[in-house]
Image (spheres, rainbow, N blue to C red):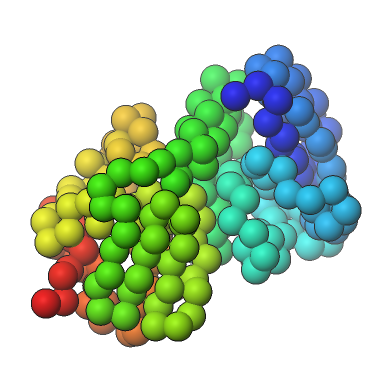
Length: 232
């Protein structure tokens, strides 16, 4: 959707120039900064954009620290930029609440596809589907209002986390395969990227389960996928 605001945080001028050029060509409004401290200052002064593209390796506050700070107050979508082969960085970024990652070096087409996919999920995170609400044990979800409570505590979920929970809730008591979840939540191009899904489910369990190490609500079906248990 043309005109959406994107904050790009990277200390390499060549990446900033390339990202700005390609995203502005698609109609996005781009703000670029080179440090984590500058990114937080922008967010504090101008409010949150529609998307943050955040490099991990930054002077001063690194991308992980910035991501964690942002997630304390906002569910704005975040795409992390990681170095090739840094699988640990990908997992850590996803666990801190990033919605996706792009591996450097990347093509313009790959970046644009990831940006489009993340923004599309954010736009449709609250799209009414069945069920409109859910109550399972101490978990209460109002999908129309995008509000989640565990007992009397309100829980903030990112747009991606909402969509995973919504997909599982729409199939409560039935197994949803990993690739089906990836396709419905992220898009067909994500089929096979099970690590992204695994970490997102891990984040959901940290927020929703009484004992995330022994989940009763979001259960793993070995060799198949996940299901939302009824707890009946």
